Length: 628
Image (tube, rainbow, N blue to C red):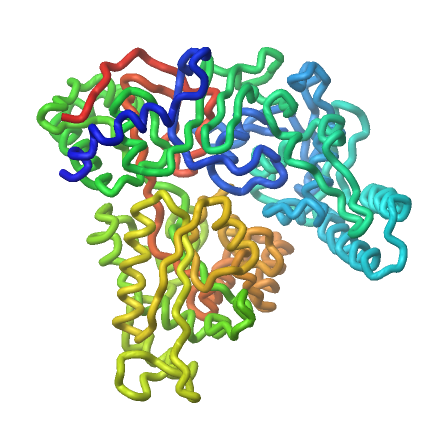
C-alpha cells in the first residue's frame, strides 16, 4: 500500500511533531488532535477545544458517560421547583481555582453574564436564552451599543457609564442570582428538559473574573467590552478543573498536568496529558506507529478504511471469546485487551475503533443575498439549494469515497438518536427533480454546452467550495461532490482548502458559497442541531433566516407537553431539510479512534464522545508496533 512506502520518508517528521521540550518527560498519555483554537470557555465551539476544556474547567455539573447523565461538579447538589423553572445549586465550599481562590457562585454568574453579552461574540449565547430575561437583556445590549456608536460622545467616561448601566440592567432583568458564595439560583422562562446537561457544558463553566479583568478593556469607540486572548495562556490562565494548563504553543500542542488544588468528584487519573496537533492525517498514523502518540482522536488517513477492516477481521476471528467476556461484564475495551494479541506481521490489528457518533457530516450553503465580492448569491434561492442537495448520491459517497458505509443522512438530527423524536423524511437523491428545481430558479442549459445559464445568458458562477486542510476524507468528498454537481446540474466548482484558523474566519465573514461543516450534538435534544439554523445563532455561519422556522422553535420552547413539543421540533426540521435546505446533510458521523485498549484506558464509546482527558490512564506499556 502507498502509505507503507512512505514510512521512511516521514517517520522522523512524525517523531519531531510530538517533541515539545527535551527537558520535559514524556506525558503519561499523548494524543493527536486538531489544533486548539481557544481556551476561553465562553468563546469556544470546536470539539477539540471543548474536549480540553472539560479537563481544565468544571461546571456546576459534570457528565458521567457510563450512566449517561449529569452528575455533581462544582455543585454538590441542587433543588428544583415543582414547575421545573427554578433551580437552586449548592456549591462545594472547598472548590478552589488553581491560584487558591475559592470558586464561588459569583464566578458562575459573571461567566454566564459574559456569555450573554454580544460583545463576547460567543457561538453559544443562545444556550442561556431559556433563562428568564436573558434574551431580552441580549437584545437590550445590542440596541444600547448601536445607540452608543450613533451618539456624539465616544470617550472612556462614556464607555464606562454604558458598562455601569449594563451591569445594572443585567441585575434587574436576568434571573441569575448569587445570594451567597455557595448558592446560585437560576429561574427559567419555561422548563428545559436538558438543563442539567447544559450545566455540564464547557461554555457554561465559571471564569476567574479577577484574572480576566487584567486583560479586559472597554473600547471607547464602540463601547464593547473586549478581552485579550493573553488571559488564556499558560502561567496566566486560572482554572478550576481536575487538570491545569502547563504548556501551550501554537501548532505545537499543549500539556496538561493534575491540578493539586482540585477537590471534586472527578480526580485526575493521568499524571500528564499532551495534546499534539498533527495536520497531516497520514503523519499522525506514523507517529502512532512509532510510539510517539497513544491515541489518534480522529483517524482520517486515506487508508483508514483498510485499517478498520484489519481490526474488524481480527475481532471476528475471536468473536466467541469476545462475546463471552462481554457477557461476563467486561467493557468492550477490557474484552478486546484480553483477546490474543494481533499478529502485526499478518496485518492484524486491534487498535482501530469505528464508533457511532451523535453527529452529522454536512456542507453549508451561504444563504446571504450577496457574496463576499458583492455579487448576487445564487444560493440565496432555496430552489438552488434543493437542487444541489438532490443531485448528491450519498450512498455512493459512503460506499466508494469514504468506504466506511456511514448511515446516509437526509436530516440534521441523527435518526433514532433521541427518544420520542420522529425525524422527517428529508430530500432523496433525484437528479431529474434537481434539474427541475434549477430550471424553476432560472438556471437552464440554453445553448447545449453542458453549462447552465440565467435568462441573460450568464453562466452559473463557479462554486467556491471551502474546507479545512488536513483531512483527506473531506477533500475526497469535495472532489466527488464537485463531479456530481458538474454532471447533474451543469455547474463548475472550485475547491479551496485553508488552514483551520483562516477557514473559520472565512465562515464567520461569509466568504464562501458552499463550505464543509459538521456538528456533534452537545445535549440530548433535537435543538442541539436545530438551533444551528436559528436567526442570529452564533453557529449559524450560513446567515440563514426563516421566520416560520424561528417561530416553531419558539413554540417548542413554550410547549410543556413533551409529545407536542417534539412534534413542533419535527415540523421545524421538516421545514429545514425539505424546503429551505441551508444545510446539506451527507451522513451520520462515525468517528475512528486509533489506540490500543491494552495500553490506554478511560476512553468512552458513548456516541456523545465526551472524552474526559483527566480520566485517561496507561494500563501498561504496550509493545511498540512499527509498520512492516
